[in-house]
Amino acid sequence: VPVIRALARSIDVPVSVDTRKASVAAAALEAGAQIVNDISALGDPAMAGRVAASGAALVLMHMQGSPETMQDDPRYGDPVAEIADWLAGRLAAARDAGIAGDRLVADPGLGFGKRLEDNLAILRRLEELHALGVPLLVGASRKSFLGALTGRPVEERRDASVIAAVAAAEAGAAVLRVHDVRATVDALRLVSDLRAAHSRARGEAQGP
Image 1 (cartoon, rainbow, N blue to C red):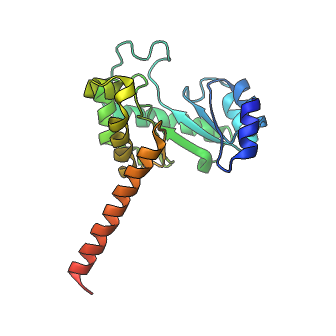
Image 2 (cartoon, one colour):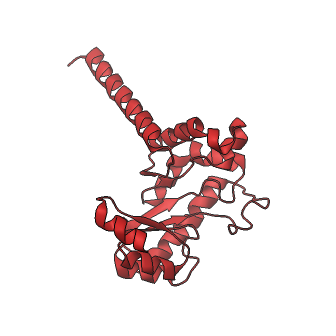
């Protein structure tokens, strides 16, 4: 809590706390945190009320099972459709508790109860999750599915992490959770500049 209080006083960006416990969230919010990232998506029945009373933003993440069991043979029929349906229910519960829709964010939970093919399906079909009607947060950075895909240990997954972040941003992700901030920002700026240059060239070719 002292660290959160110090950060909230010294930086001009919102402070986010990652917790499944309403009591921890309440203490962090009291100290100045403005975002609660709940990987259990209201697994604690008291969480929604605490966040609603504070006026903070809330990130709800999909996870099959619990952190202890999530990788014990996760199975889906259609992972993206099932994740969307589950998140829609959690978002509805948050709204029912009094949390305004413009303070909600959805996270499909890459790596949380997902096989390699499930994670790739989420990245490939991320645009479908915009139907939830809230901003999307994506956190692929250094995760084990990137290691399974590339054969790289965690300390060598920067390049794959940056590519995954760019892919998510291109699909409309509003928030990216990354470790390698500078490399990710550089890549995003390059893609943005290239797209702008392409649009200008196309406009010039078409003429007035």
